[in-house]
Image 1 (cartoon, rainbow, N blue to C red):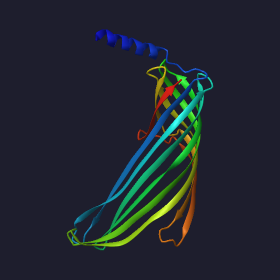
Image 2: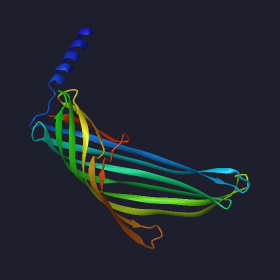
Image 3: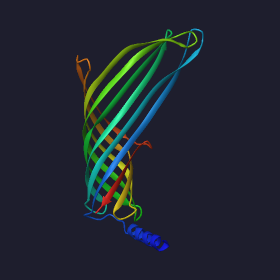
Image 4: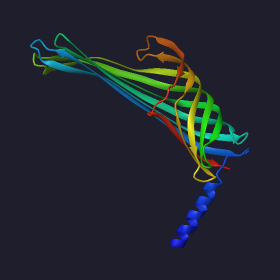
Length: 251
């Protein structure tokens, strides 16, 4: 048993020692990303007899992506590639306001999902035989479909802040939104190759990027529709909650 473990360890080490990137090498793999954020803003109001009421305004965002990826190495430092994947997000917002013994609650939820395609180029800087730092420059385009729904209710409070009656005052949706988006960006990452065939990536959001987005919304009541666009340049748009990972096979 000990001899077997030693032999396996030696084979693994020999694979690791010679792990390197070469001209003509190809890789296939799967990359994924996850973005999480939450904000909670509290404020205080006072009932007629002086009882304090704490109001919570909460917003939660979850984004995810998964994409098969192919790369071809033009040299030991440059690679070009293409990823085609699926991404989506969910946003919930809860807003409270207190006025004249009435506590107003508003809840909104938006979900969306769609496909995207992104050609890219990578420049690798070797840190060791197994670890490489890289910059990735890419152009992405995607289409997605989403929906938004929500409700509002009013709660009557007594002088001590206790609920006496709740009335659902409004409900809307789902409003449907079709989105087209494009982006250009540069982001950093790390590639670790435990063997010469397997690579594991960890990357962050963009150091610099440009984004364009166009939304077309049809409202549930069928009365009208709207169109909006957003665009802008972003700098240093990355943090510990905006990271992605990838696992690749090199051949």
